[in-house]
Structure formats: structure tokens, C-alpha cells
Amino acid sequence: MKELTIPNHVAIIMDGNGRWAKKKGLPRTLGHKEGIKALKRTIKDAYALGIKYLTAYVFSTENWKRPKEEVEFLMAILDKLIVKEVNELHLRGVKVKFLGELNDLSDALKKKIIWAEELTNSNTKMQLNLLVNYGSRQEIAGAIKKLINNNEEITESNISNNLYTSGIPDPELIIRTGGENRLSNFLLWQAAYSEIWITPEYWPEFNKQLLMAAIEHFSTIDRRFGGLNA
Ligand code: IPE
Ligand code: IPE
Ligand code: MG
Image (cartoon, rainbow, N blue to C red):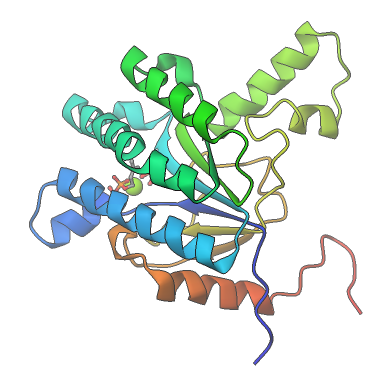
């Protein structure tokens, strides 16, 4: 078998929490709770594999359309995740970043986000990007607006440098669970040459075997970037 190529940056659309719960006759909220467990496992697995950047889509700008109780539950589990996990992530040398329109979040959550980012800012083992109130179109429009306001040229590198992901290399591998063949406003600019691996399993079912399956698939791909390989 071909040697494994571990991607530098893996980005995940963690989809299917609600369907997982429905399948089991449980409330959607329990699906989100299991989803957090899957995220914790995946952070550990990615860390052990030496993946340098792990990006997870936690809440999109469109997810506000959901019932108020579900939105509140999602915000509450994110809050809990920060309180319960960031100290340990810090001990392991993980830098935690929150990308998205964070101003719209509650003051209490914002405070924890700032605390987590400041605490872990100089860590270098791995960077965990949590996309919260994130929308790629909004991100791109915001970058262009900034360039215009600063009277800067609209170039590819200037746009990249004004996205939330400024300084972060583009993901080589995007994983989507839950089987839908779409990006749902996720990293549209950054995904220009990403390999996309979609699996029908729901996010709460995600595990090391599936992560390895994605990486094994990635390792076999001939990445040409528009050119020709020998
Ligand atoms: C992903 O699972 C989590 C979020 C979008 C916050 P969903 O809640 O979208 O689950 P499905 O897609 O309805 O099954
Ligand atoms: C994408 O899932 C957003 C997150 C995983 C946070 P959605 O469930 O919101 O996407 P759609 O509605 O299926 O496109
Ligand atoms: Mg969904």
C-alpha cells in the first residue's frame, strides 16, 4: 500500500447530529451532545497523527434559523466545551482559535472565547480552529470591504490575508459527515484545491477508523492544481 500522507490541515463539516438522534428516537439536542464527544475524540486522534491544523464547523451564520431552544443548546454546549476542555488542550500545546462573526455572541461566551484564545495563543503543537457564527460569503465580503476601506489593492493574497483564516494554510482535506454533497457556506475561498471526502455516517458516529479512511483516500489522490504530474 502507498505510504500515508498526513495532511497539514484537515477541516470538518460536522453534519448529521439531528439525524443521528432521530434514528435512535432521541431529541436533536442529544445528537449535539454526542457530537461534542465526537469532536473531542477527533481532536485527540488528529493530534496523535500530527495534523497541525484542525478546523471544525461548529455553527454557521445560517444556523440561527433553527428553533431558539436548539440555538441556545448549541451555544451552551460550546460554552461548556471551552470551560471543560481548554485547560487540557493548553497543557498539550494546542492553540485554540474561534473564527466567525463573534460580536453577535453573548457577552458571557465572548469572554470565554477571549480567555481561551489568550491562554493558548503561544502554543505550537497543533491549532484548533472552531468556526462559530461563520459564513464564508460574509467572510469574503468582509475582507473586500476592509481592503476598500484601507485603500488596498484587491488581490488574491490581500483577500486571503483579510479572511478569518489569515495566516492559516488552506485545508488539504475537507471531511463532511452526514452524506450531503455540498459545502454549506464553508471555506469557499480556502477550499479552492481541497480534496473533499464525504461519508454517510452521522457526525456522532465519527471515529478514528473514519478519519484514517479519509486520510488513506487523501494519500492516493493525484493532486495536480491545474498542472500535470509526471
Ligand atoms: C450538525 O448537525 C450540527 C450543526 C449544524 C450545528 P445537524 O444539527 O445539522 O444535524 P442534521 O443535519 O439535521 O442531521
Ligand atoms: C453545516 O451543516 C453547518 C455545520 C456543520 C455547523 P448544516 O446542517 O447547517 O448544513 P445544511 O443545512 O445541511 O446545508
Ligand atoms: Mg445538518
